[in-house]
Image 1: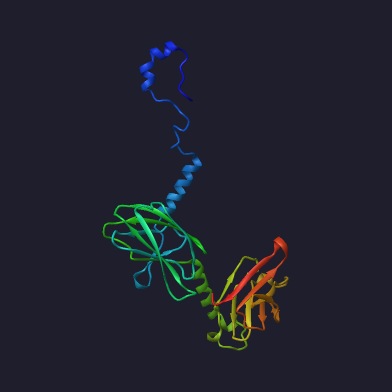
Image 2: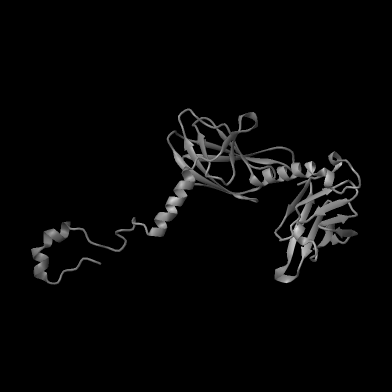
Length: 278
């Protein structure tokens, strides 16, 4: 509530006290947090303070597992920290908590079509702590930045769970080659270099080619159900090519570069995109 007096006499009698006593105003306890706010800050603090997995990559790169914790990158004045993102990833925004004493400059490496963006980070003095958010075409990075007088991480990168899963799937596919239909082609001659994007209950578990035909393997739960329709993308147009369903395998009489699988219509429609070469 606000400070009030009832009479002029009271004002005269308590003039000095009122002049020095603090008034209770709205927002006086603005620093107090609700239970949800306290819980939220505790969860965020635990995530920021967790150690997480840090490994050594090629050429002395410090590698964090993306999404596990908030990585803490240590930099030093008069040195640069090179934070390398995933090849092909496009940076949308870079937001810094302290834009006065920290500077970030972009750089690129690699051939056109598979370039990687580097964020070169420079602090102006030691003893600084701030945060950085980087939004890209694939994900959002939340990074803590610290500055030290002499210690720093020269190169920083990330390992991505999706990449690990894709590599594991590729290895498993090759180990199971004896059970893979492929017109009698040796496993080492099969091409598993396809990426699958999109969400659907029948999302393919793997895609590969023997150079003449393309094989799309679905979860076993698809057997006995209506299979999605396949369209091959050519010249910017979707066209139908010959294919047949054998169990949970779609065998396409075509060496597919890019294709779309579609099931359902309207808002219930599900679509999966298949692309050769990642």
